[in-house]
Length: 322
Ligand code: UT7
Image (cartoon, rainbow, N blue to C red; front, side, top):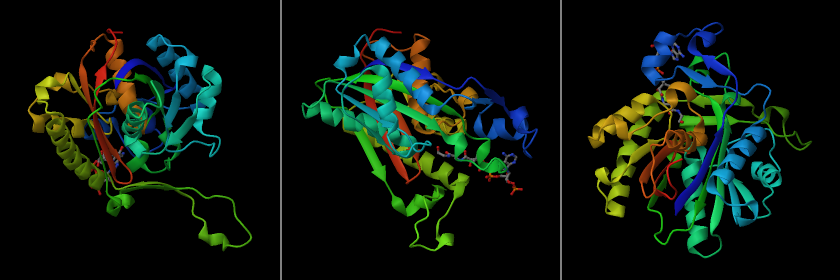
């Protein structure tokens, strides 16, 4: 499978660490060395649907394809204020595509899970071109009185048009539900007359940061090595290692472990914060826009998140530099 077009859209409101310290007991001095985050974009009067649609239209235009050429739309989204219809329904309508669509929740690794589904559809002969969109508004899962979570996240959407390639995409997905409690966000649904009122739970995100950090580093090292072995590649065959932007220190730990130069690990976390599954395609689009990716380059993508799920894949860049 190859990527033939990308696009992104982020909220217009930039929030600095100093702005957060006006209402939280936190500081730039605490946030930057522990996370690498300086600013993040946070939704105000846009909707997540607006961002997902804008990113999708840009990716479609960048691919050179028309709406009628898209055989499927997959949207990675953990949550938004529509439980139904899916985010991908809004995207289908606005882009003029007529193909089937559905959303998936693979937490922060959702974009890689969507790539895997797309590759399987392509290799079963059911699709040639697929629009994959990752759209997330994690800032709305946080309790904004808790500094432990709210300083970490940002919002955004990014999309990629992927197309059939004769070689199947090397991929590794793992899940270990023994660790499902390390990140949780529980929402109350409607109350029925048949249950006790106090049974329904509404609880902002709970993040066991140290556990997630440890697991992220351990899993990413394991998955990247296994994926390179599976693909018969050396780290030097990879143009860029594009890791989920959860924490700059996690990226640095993997880079040191692989003994590869820092330039092979581009990051955007300084100005994006953690945007869950949107982080990897946002990173791809920003890197491509700088003209840093050329036709035939191999990108190793790696992400991890609630579940606990992980995903790593090697995708080919299928177009000239942006
Ligand atoms: O996409 C996947 C989801 N999430 C992640 O990948 C997050 C992974 N984890 C991390 O990035 C790091 O664990 C954090 C950045 C979340 C936290 O860094 P840490 O070095 O593990 O800090 P900590 O949680 O152990 O907290 C250390 C101290 C605590 O104070 P005491 O108990 O030592 O007095 C916290 O209360 O820092 C305090 N603290 C803060 N202080 C200022 C926690 N958050 C803040 C804050 N500002 N925002």
